[in-house]
Image (cartoon, rainbow, N blue to C red; front, side):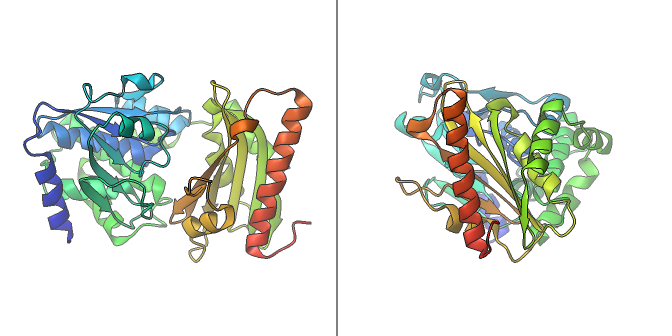
Length: 361
């Protein structure tokens, strides 16, 4: 199926759904790519009389993401009561920039028998969800896929419309962010960026992308620097326990570690505690090595859970992972908490160094 055929299939999917409300499901910790894709689906849905709600199950703490939402006046709904996810409220659900494995809402939506209308993503096929419409392409940013629907005029963009300028700015930010400032861009990403440029608000984009780091983020970066081990161009660092609201500091720390001379791949991880007491080890991988393949690297290194789901995955130049602690979750005393962290810290480091074939010490 070529690009024009995909767009026509997408438009056909939305025809005849006037009056419906769709849940647009973002990963638990939405990034600029996901947020912009959700915004794009909202605009596309409006053209067919469809109401949308952008929902997520985690937190948004990265300063750029907060600025993106505030400056572009976007509404995202954090779902704290999953009982609200019903087929009475939503006539369909759509997953953008994820395939359900990075959202804690997926199982509830499936059990509620809300029809799975579409999955649009740029990550490798995880064979987890089967929607009526699937658009999975190996491009740098999912925002580029959503932009192709605009390029084929499912909605005709107009620079005179404030909403369209905001959308173009969001999508451009998503593309720049997920391609590493276009370093990991594919031809589709470049075409999408070129299409968006005339509609984009450059001043607003610049303001979104140049937010100051918070004290908490700087503290996580400090810990990452203090705890890092570097071997054969790989830098790995564990930052210990952090709150869920500070989770976005982990990828920022990985990006900072990547700037060190001789480092081509950085992995940063920490023990993230949610308000409900559940804990997981969450990590980010960033690389400048084109031959690495973050998706395969993390899947091979960390393996699968007992249910068959991979703990990690990725795309070009970046990846992430999450390992739930399950029974070991909970607020323990200082000694037990330290023992828990020490065990996971040592295990993850060992797995990474075994994967690259070097001794840790």
